[in-house]
Image (cartoon, rainbow, N blue to C red; front, top):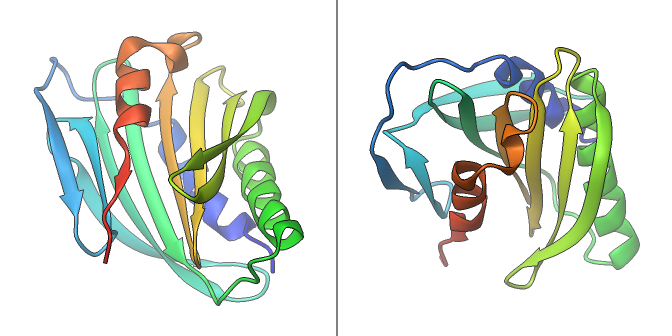
Amino acid sequence: MKLIALAILTTVCLGALASPGQPTWNTFRSEEGRFTVTMPGRPDGSRKTVKGDAASVKLHVFMASTESESFVVTYADYERFDDNRADVDRILDAARDGAVTNARGSLISEKKIMIGDNPGRSILFTNGTGKHIHENILLVNNRLYQIYVVSNAGGAESADARRFLKSFRLIRK
């Protein structure tokens, strides 16, 4: 199963640096998404159906922006994945490759991460317009989360970017 469809939205969100002023940071909670995250202001939420090679998926997107950075959480539910390590690595690799490719970007760095018992990847890459993206990709059962910051060159490692990425928490059912 290919996950490139999920990464298509990354391309849509990459150019979205907007909102004037510095909003107050708040904890946002998505019961349906089963997560909390600290973001500037209240995020805009949307749902999109994304067509992939094997099937269509409903992609949930939450985004908040400052003058210099956009903070995004997406998630999508897929058919059941095998729990074996090779399948998990293949899924995370496909999500990474799709994000970088759809952004017409170049991968700068990557490391394997765990959030709780859930495997993931933390990647840093540039897109075709020179923006930097720091993204955490997380696989939780059949749900794939992408948590990322889009910023001007060098900003993806800012204090706000770190604050946002570190604040992501899963809510137990």
